[in-house]
Amino acid sequence: GAVVSQHPSRVICKSGTSVKIECRSLDFQATTMFWYRQFPKQSLMLMATSNEGSKATYEQGVEKDKFLINHASLTLSTLTVTSAHPEDSSFYICSALRTERGSGYTFGSGTRLTVV
Amino acid sequence: AQTVTQSQPEMSVQEAETVTLSCTYDTSENNYYLFWYKQPPSRQMILVIRQEAYKQQNATENRFSVNFQKAAKSFSLKISDSQLGDTAMYFCAFMGTNTGNQFYFGTGTSLTVIP
Image (cartoon, rainbow over all chains, first blue to last red; front, side, top):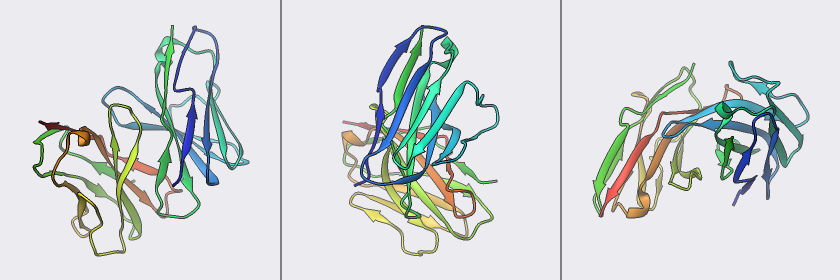
């Protein structure tokens, strides 16, 4: 079945530093990947849509200069949180859409980011 | 705009019993897909079941089944013979064919299976 690998699963960083999160589709090509942020006991909030070979589309209110997204290949998208602050601490989840419509999303296992 | 509503923030069910989680949605599209995802304490999102809107037959996956009422824009999930491992957050999701493959999630229902 479709597998999406997300790394790291947990990361602690100091304020002001940058953190990169990787999302890889292991056994399928993903033309589109999505990045979500999830607060405790809440639903997933879409941050941005990442399309291979083009610029990401950010949702309203998401700072594109702070959350850099790169989708350089059909199997890899990265989210870099730049100049991290404690309020960026959250659970980040990526998902990938298989080229077959209606297959749904396959989600990564998420990354718990803690900024101290 | 698409909206997905889950009106039950929390539910509980006795082990081996049956529980139904509600989901309604709003769309002007005719062709779309509906999904139920499970998020256990591990936070991994797991696809439980999906339904194509053009199919009248309700989808079934082992102990999980849906009641899809297209006219009413309702998509409920029934879990039969509930097991302790079913304890999780459950999210209903909508994906239209004209919305760039974007998912619209409901706010989730926290289900607890009581031994």
